Length: 394
Image (cartoon, rainbow, N blue to C red; front, side, top):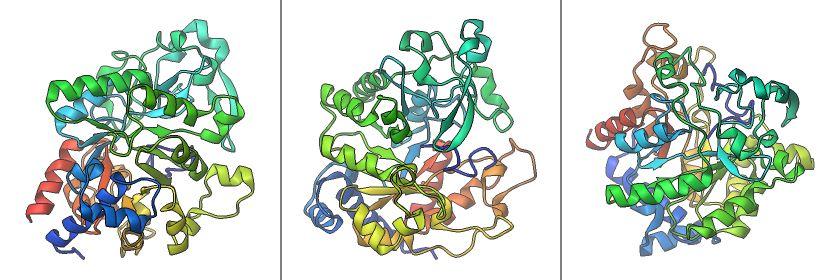
């Protein structure tokens, strides 16, 4: 999960319903998301009531380790993924998928890797630094599509937001960049070792941008999923993207649960910009828009602000109808992203002004859980699990 440059505006700075009824509704829509793909939301919901596996087997609200345990380790590394499992995450977002020059898929937050690797310390790659237009934004740095996999494997991951997570810099340089194929093998290994099914939640990044470069993501993802027998309705791999047409393409290639990511209400998915589709995210979260999404996807991943908007001072206001509207159409909701540090929390849950200081994350989790969401992406899976325990037992 992550930005498409401006897709997650708070990235860098960043009521209660009866528990029993909420859990029942959540289980129903989760079943709808994981049981029968290619059906309408209503049909999937009916199938869920008849039973089935897949996402329905996961606790609700589901705790999703955002880029692993990125609150404690540099993101999209096996150190981060492993810790997310150790902390108890129900699903690990492993990872944000971008291609190499020779067509391999690797896990990085963005194709630009200057902020997440030590590439700047490699003089042999100094000439690769360049400026490109990525989804309409001029971006300077080093890009995965300009490196072979062998070259990327000489780099090591570093903490992306050291001002907020200085403790994570202790692990700078420890882990290499994982490939998606390595993640799929790791998933199998961890499932065997832990005696329980490990779930992953990869995202295709900038599909339109890479398709124009001849590096289409969806076909590569589908090929690897088929190779490892993970392209089925109940496979423990949920696929997500900010581009609806990318999800539609995946819907034709695999049977996995699919989720459309949604940025701010006024933003437009980049594939819409490219094709001249005038609709914004605000159009996609109307009943009509959600009905359309339910025709090819099983869920949505909205920003938390689409679930509960904030006022001009950053305080939470009244929840929107998005949760109820999406559930009515058989869609699950996995909003992003809960973080413990003050700058990323709603204003009323902050404690002090230290950029790396923790606020009242438990209070914020409770507020979002009370809306009936089916799960949440979080950089701090342990906090999320404790918050869920408080909420379910409260």
